[in-house]
Image (cartoon, rainbow over all chains, first blue to last red; front, side, top):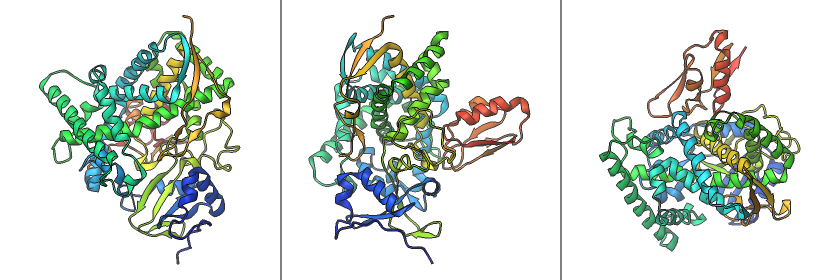
Length: 441
Length: 67
């Protein structure tokens, strides 16, 4: 006999918990975790969901095979953005092969080239800032990370010649990620029409680059090169349409997540000056030998890394990760039935007081929890964010450069910098303005 | 020391192979991520530091070392 799933109070007829969920998702999830424990059933517009929280439940969620907890249904809304036949719109077999090719672009061998590219981009970007002034960092970091990711994915050449057209097309894709897209992404809406046009045009642009590269003998070290040269197990190569889809998917996965984390990293440095001093001290020691940013971002800076990991604990960029139950799923004797959605929430996971004492306090010296699935900013298991090493590398390169070259200060009270929970994802609430002053050489 | 790897977690990032190729190699697997293969489960003490660097450098914490 299966034990019943503990159910959250407060459901209303038809809509279930939707109103409370939409009003404040993090507060709702925290409430039902406190009320129900590791498993908490809730209902959104008739669709039953189960929040799995606590290290053991999070581990079970992460380790479940694709055949039991599937990803595809949860990604319905992005299928037209990535393209037909790409990733979650393919068979499980094909999906696995495409994910493998995507990860190949993020392996250690490519990372060395990326470290240099990112360090150069950040220097170029901040060279335009001038000597001193005020900057709105949400937007600055969104642009900075669009440039770094374009350079790493499509190559430095493409990035140097990048036009406004590309940024606009990318924005049209982003604007189609709205709640209704996850119910029916093919409705006749202006957002979806703009999305389909943008996707087609991006396909043309990428096809053009691919053709030029195939005709030249030049060597490239970027993700596009990996996608162009990779093969499926049957020996066939990716079509330009599939290459474009993987590029978009990789960019989508890494752009807002990285730029939001960069914004919070800067704000937390300024809220916690004693920790910033420690990290600056480390930078002074590390760079005393005259080595370059890319080298040290790859290999060192443990204090910087500990600081960034604490930022990701307090401000995980994805608040919930969703799977669809494809076969009845047994967790410690409780069966979660086929058709349910199961949710892991880094936002909930990182604020559990038994795992992270005094969880609201920012502390870069917090010991790493013993349980591998307690800190889940990148998810975990087979589908852990494959860009996790890239993300940390990029943040280290950005902040090594920023802290070496500039002094920053807040322009508003420290507690006025907040998250925005109103959209599909959590993001820092603009404006987040800081004052900067270039250091004297 | 004895080396253990948790293949549920391995996505073939290959840091281990870079840090300690004597012990770790990442091989393509049919229809999925490439994964680590441990060449020596009980490597000699002179490899300890390299093995530790591999375990520490792994972005997915796949490698554990038992004494």
